[in-house]
Image (cartoon, rainbow, N blue to C red; front, side, top):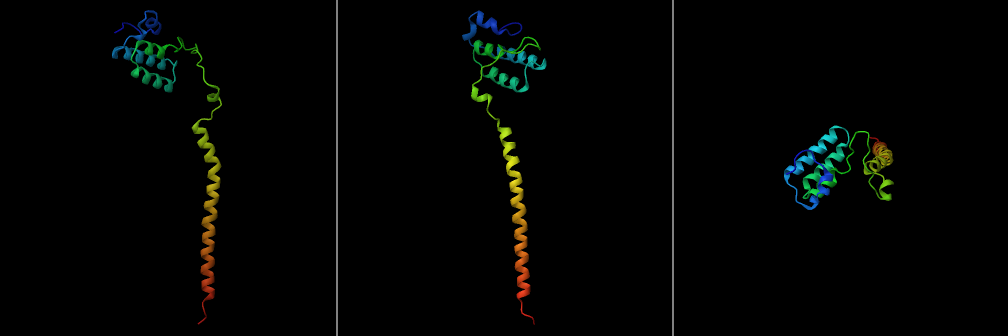
Amino acid sequence: MTAGPWEPMAARRTGRDRLRACDADREQVIDTLKAAFVQGRLSKAEFCLRAGQALASRTYGELAAITFDIPARLGEAPPPRTAPAQDRNRIDKRTAAWGMFMILMPVMLGITFVTHYVGFFAMFLIAFIGVMAQPDG
C-alpha cells in the first residue's frame, strides 16, 4: 500500500510498474480521479471511463497510465492523444439517427395521410355506389 497522494511517475521511477497493485492503491487512484473531476479537469465521461479502468487494473503501471495525462492545473490542457484520421471525420450515431428521422418522418406522415384518406374515400365511393345501385322499390 502506498502512502500519501497517488503519484504515477513515482511508480515508474522505482520500477514498480510491473508489481501487482492492491485494492487500496486502486482506491487512491479513484480518489485522485474524483478530485480531478470535482476541479473540472476531467469530464464525467472521462471520469467514468478512467474509474472503470482503475477498478480493472492489476499493476502499478496500469494505474499510472490512468492518471498520467490528467492536467496538473485547471488551465493546463492534457497531452494530446493521437487518434486515427478516420475517427475525426466520423459522424456519431446520434447525429445519424436524427438525420434519418428528419428524412423519414415527413415521408411516413405523407404515406399515413394518403393511405388513410384514400381508404376513407374508397369506402365512401363503394357505399355511394351501393346506395345508388339499389333498385327503387
